[in-house]
Length: 271
View 1: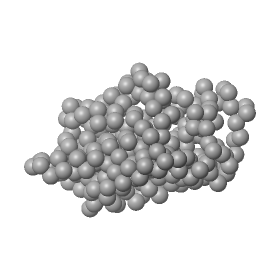
View 2: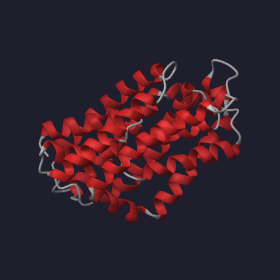
View 3: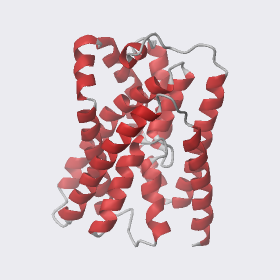
View 4: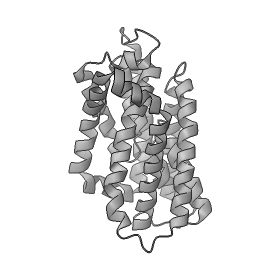
């Protein structure tokens, strides 16, 4: 990749990692749609994705640093709820890593999953309307999330497992799970962002040492440029989404993913 491609893909990854539209889905589909001759199975591209994910996780941690301090000081139970929510995706990701990685080789499959991600988001909104109870006791999201039961946190974690499939959004799956157990959009989004920080960071940290050991031939410049772009994209998107979900829903993202998935599928089938 050249610098322009790295910056575009890095910014795209950082922004879409937090939007409920699947960052990996976009990163896999975009190069062939743009006519870029990039080998997505090459170690360099994997290194690039790991670096952008690490940058995104670091930016998330910095953005919610005060929240993490409060969680450790005042909401110890919330910390354990996050641990419980991380277990399903973390465990299955480790057990089936090779099989899941093979799915990235098919852009057609990723486009299908992206469309299904749209259906998931719309379905979560539809099912939420049928619920009579919402966990909302104050304007403090941490306090509201802290009222989740252990089973509810585990259910949200199980929803996050869908994000192991390229094309399904981690934020979207977690948000959907949060809505279905009774959280408001605002609280479900905060829980999704907090839950994303350790699992994105851990996935990057686990892969990084092995890749760095064989990175002598990698061009560092484009990787660094992509990571910086990802960090900026993540910062801007989380600022926007934190305000957006105070009053808005997942429906616009549902329609976008459904349309983007179908259009990408048709274009990829032609080219």
